Length: 417
Image (tube, rainbow, N blue to C red; front, top):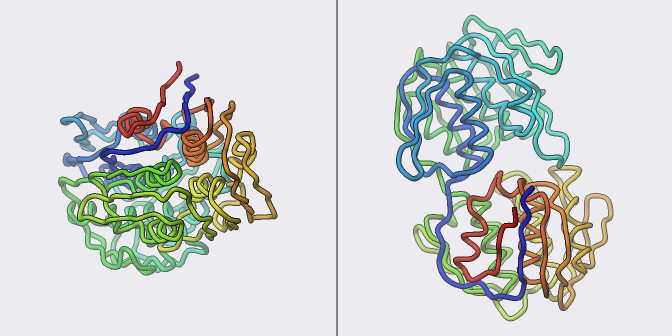
C-alpha cells in the first residue's frame, strides 16, 4: 500500500494547472447512458474514482475510448447489462448515479447499495422516492436497488433534504420521462449546473439548474455531444490552503474563483492576498495566518469538502477558531491524526475548537477519507521534520498526481510504494 513522505518546512511558490472536477465528471460520465450516440468529454481527471466509473460503464456495454491527454469518448449504443454489481460499487458511492439513466433509457436497473467514504450516512432513499414519484416500481432486495418502468412519467418531486447525487440522478432520469418534472429543494452546486449544461448539449430541456427548483421537459431521446468538465473547485481550494499554510506565493492555472466565494473570503480573513483572473488564481500568504471560524452548509455556503483543509491551516494560525460541521456526522476523523502532529483541537459534538500553536512536528499518520487525507498533506507541508501519510489510496480517489503538482511548487514530497 502506497504512502506519502513529506519533508515539511518548504514554502510553496510557482504555477501549476488544476484538473477537471471529479464531482462533476462522475455524473456527467453517467449521462452517456442516456443516448446510443457517442459523447465526447474533455478535461477528464485521471483519478481512481474515474477509472472505477469507466470500468462500471464498460461492464454495462458502454464503449470507452481514450482521446488525447484528458479526453474520452463514451458510446452507449451497445448498452446490454443494466447491472451495477457490489464488487464495482463498494468502493465508490457515486455508482448510484447510473440508476436514473438506466431506468430512463432501458426501463430497468439493478444497482448495488453503495459504499465509499466512511464520513457518515448518505442514504439513497431520496433517489428511490423520486423514481417512485415518476412511476418506477422500486424494490430493495439482497443489497440491491431494483427499479423498473416502461417509461417514466414527469412528476413534482420535493426532496426531504438537499442531496447532490439525488438531484443529479433524478434530473438525468427526467430527461427521457414523459412530460414535465419539477425537482424542488434541489441541490445548487456548480457540479449540478455542469451536468445540466452537458445534458442540454445532448438535447435535454432543463431550466433552473443552480437554483432550488429545476424544471425538466422530457424528450423522446438524447443525442451525442461534446462537453468540457469544469475545473475542480475543491482541488483548487486545497492548493490555496497548502500555499497559505507554508507562507507561499502560487498561481493556479485552468481554474476559476467563480465557485469559491466562501473559501476565498475565509482565506482573505486569514490574511492572504488573493488576485482573481479569468482562468487563474494567485495567492500570497502572510508570515502567519489568522485563525478563521467557519460553518459548513450546502452550496453556496462553505463546502464540507473544504472543512478538513481549513482545520489544518487553523492548527498553526494565530488565535482560536471554531469549526462547525453540519453536513456529515462523522467528518472529524482527521482530528486525532492532526493531534499526532501536535495540533491542539477539542471536539464538542459537531464543533471543533482549534487553538493555533507555533509549530507542528512530523509524525506517522493515517488517512481516513479523501478530504481528511488532504488535511494531513497540508499539515505535513508545514510540520517540522518528516511526515508519513499511510493509506493514501483515498488521495488518489480525488487528487490527480498530487505529489507531482506539489513538487512543481517546491514541496519535498514523494510516494513510497
